[in-house]
Image (tube, rainbow, N blue to C red; front, top):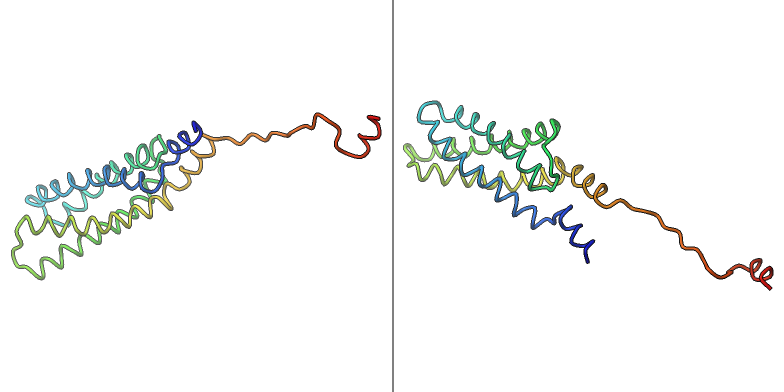
Length: 171
């Protein structure tokens, strides 16, 4: 029973991992959406989105490495680069969603902008979860699982003779 609990802590299941992803990524995403709107009042929206996406990606990758995917340590440079690739796709999706909004509505309200931005971010987030879990942090999960639970081979020894030669010599 203790081993089953230890395994759950070392390699969280998909549901637990997704809940952590939503908590960390969603929290960073909500803060980012507010920051984008605030920064966009001083700079072009695409630049504000790019800057906030870069900062939030660094923060979220660290949170995901330490907490979400159970690595318990800082993200590696490789993980940051791979995570940035998935964030670039999310950036493109949010920019495209906002461009479509600007084409459909001449002067959208801040509430409508937030709704569109968060909806696009949520769809991109689900895709990012799959990429991060299956690609970026997959090796960390495997390494954590193998180092947390080393396999020790044990050979059983017979206490009584079992082979025909041993039976003859025992008589």
